[in-house]
Length: 341
Image 1 (cartoon, rainbow, N blue to C red):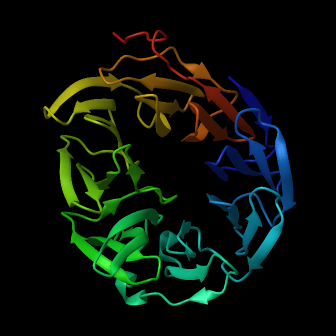
Image 2 (image 1 turned 60 degrees about the horizontal axis):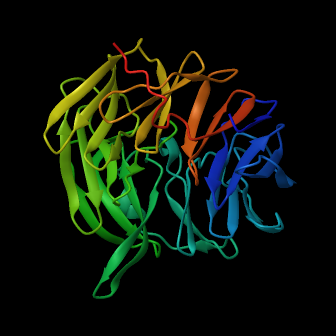
Image 3 (image 1 turned 90 degrees about the vertical axis):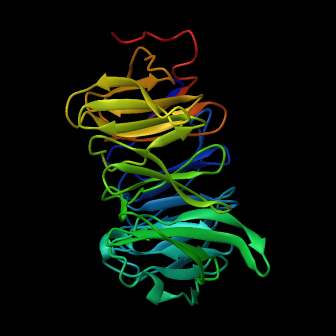
């Protein structure tokens, strides 16, 4: 463990990037921490600690559960603007000069505001009208073809088997049919991006698919059991996924299951990728690393259950749970393995 911080309340609001960790704590305080040392740079008052933070370039945005969208200067914490009236929007994504808000649980449609000042911007509302609850839109870059391209977001809902690429301007650039709607948890994290730029997601409970702006959608793997609604992890040819029996490791190039690790039902709460390994946080407060052939590290333990793992820069991993934030470096490196029986 590199460092730890008490949060005092059950907050899962965390954003990682640009050498920083931004976390909401103490009911109404947003704090920027140094990712390596855990030392605070600044803190600012917000409405609550149950919202959604995002780091985007030199900006830090926070959408509080009370419905106020704040924008701060990441370096100084200086408030740049705030916009109220966004209650129960949930999702927050920045792409280019636009901020996309809404779609969580289908309570409110996806809307768009300006990153510069929070003013309302137009959006193609009809494109997502029948999509139902949305996965949190994923920012991406589309290579220009003729006049289209640039910053965009990936949009999909639980009620429609389609994947949309929407430009930062709010206009739909392309639409891809899927076998089934994208499957995602209530929090809305439906996508995971691999190192080669492929976006991995679930189409229904048993089909793993990828999307790439230049290649469109492809079926990557069809599983024999229902997969939990967490985005699978893909690194080169290795796929890690989670079902009711535990963790399955797949070599997608050969189309074979490399290893299966049995775990208690609903034992895993969150996962991430670091150093060519998948990390899984278990219900008992332990974190394990599983490599490409099923080699498993000795578990690290934290004071309480981890609800979210996030891989940062320089081999850092940040784990947040009820009342605590813990940071590791070099978790599960070569030489630490204890291959399971």
